[in-house]
Length: 68
Image 1 (cartoon, rainbow, N blue to C red):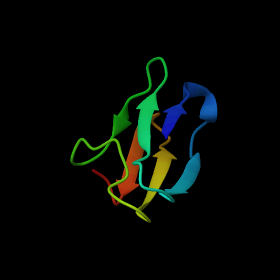
Image 2 (tube, rainbow, N blue to C red):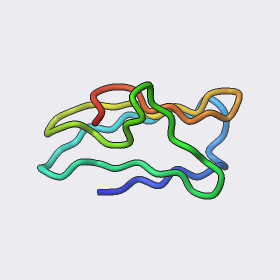
Image 3 (tube, rainbow, N blue to C red):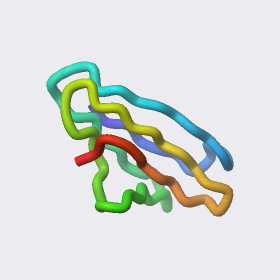
Image 4 (cartoon, one colour):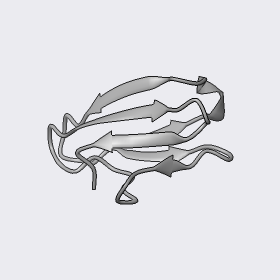
């Protein structure tokens, strides 16, 4: 499954995602949106892994949690 993140979601947008099946959830940015993660990860790591996607006030899009 893929999740495309648009630039018009607004500041302080937060969304939680749990991988419910065998396939990883992959996050990508639309247009000028870049997904940032401390390890440069853009996917969930495994079945039942939980991540949070948050747009910070400066427009940065962070992916936090069990990533791969």
